[in-house]
Length: 105
Image (tube, rainbow, N blue to C red; front, top):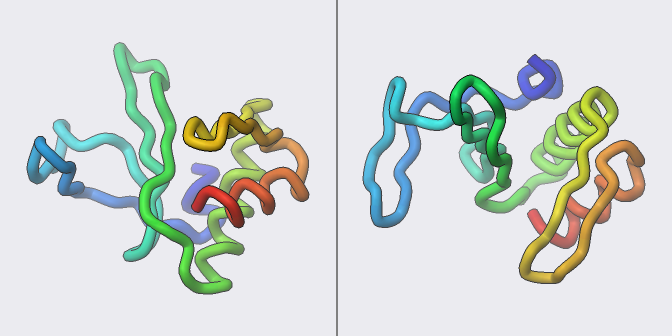
C-alpha cells in the first residue's frame, strides 16, 4: 500500500465527532501518526472520499505525508482540494504537494 510504504501506519480505530468510536468494519480505512491521519471512505468497494485530519507537527510528519500524497497522486493522478480556501493542488507535482501540506495540514 502506498501509504504504509511512505511510513504512515494503518489506523484501526477512530473517534469521530457526533459519531463516537469506530472500529473494525465500521471504521474507515486510515493511515497516519498520532498527529494526523489520511482517511479513505469507501462505498461498494470503491473509494468515495479521502480527507486529511489533524496537523503535521514534526518535520518527520511533513515528510511522510508529502511522500504518501505524492506517491498516491502520481499513481492515480489525483488533486487535493482545500475547500475552506477554495484552492486545489496537483498531487503529481512535489512542489504542489508540499504547498498543500504546508497550508492545509
